[in-house]
Length: 142
Image (cartoon, rainbow, N blue to C red; front, side, top):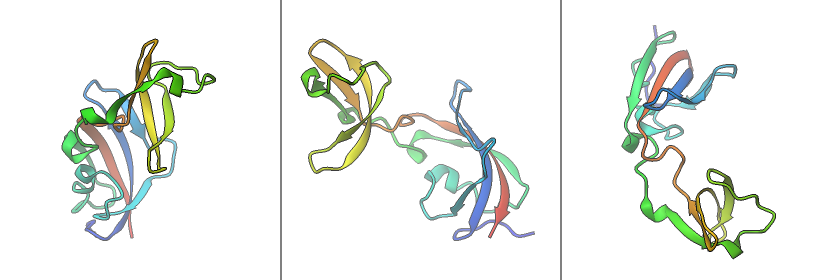
């Protein structure tokens, strides 16, 4: 039976959980995730776990933050004067917004603090700084 290797297009079902057991993503009820092994299309720690697997193989993979979405970057948290937030935006901690950088790029940010004077926005990926566990099953190799 063929083993997955770098350059192969593979399909897999997965369930990703945090250390507290909560599920942050899953392919349940959807088509399997399809990607090319070694291409950088998925996080490095999960990509490295695929070579050598055969169709039907299942495994649990622990991915440290450095091999997932990286460490939390404190400089990615920025205070913004509350007056710069449109009045029609219902501010609450945890709200995700789209912000435009000085060079015109759009980026996702999360509201992490609110005061009368300012709103602190966090541009870190929501899973940055977190170790992740994946239960995976390889369903196809092309």
